[in-house]
Image (cartoon, rainbow, N blue to C red; front, side):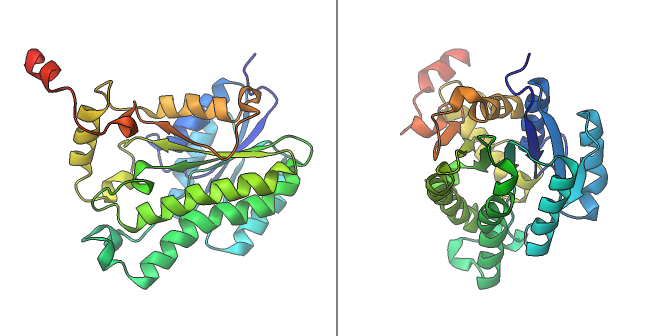
Length: 267
């Protein structure tokens, strides 16, 4: 019997089988959770429906989180489909591709608004709207962050600012929803070759650097993020809330690159 047996989880943010949200959904299904999915627009609908079918679900709903009416409609749809549910996975972030060129100093006012609205406010809006459907179920909310919230990652730009705001939002929401018996946490995942990652200029160099520097000397996988997500959303983590858990093979602990001798021996 899986650790999430009997739980219902809403998964957002899947673009394809490389998405971090896909790795989380697979791990949840493996552990017995029943799944529902959202997609942002018609362009993504077919892909998400394929994933849902693969993972034994026919519950797929359009939700553009920049529109309050979509979030309210999502609540109504979930209420009709399930009545109540246990887990919300918020894997949603966006900034116009122009904002990843140049530096933060080149950020446009409109690009800043979009990044904060879609990447940060959406977590607040979805939590507020969907919380009543978690009543009495000791619900768990999970969102996805990145190390660019803590340190400068060139070309990550306004998204780093948005992720910093997202992590702060997790702490404030943790306080708010604890009175209802619910928890919220974030995973700060190392760089993964997702569709969104390729919008960042020089991502391949970032990937190469973090792989060399982290203590294990390898990239992380969506499966590893998925396993951590299972833990954080399970009763095993019932005393953990407001945390940002790094899943990056220890990259964030390193001050300098310390494996030169090992690489020389290998070469």
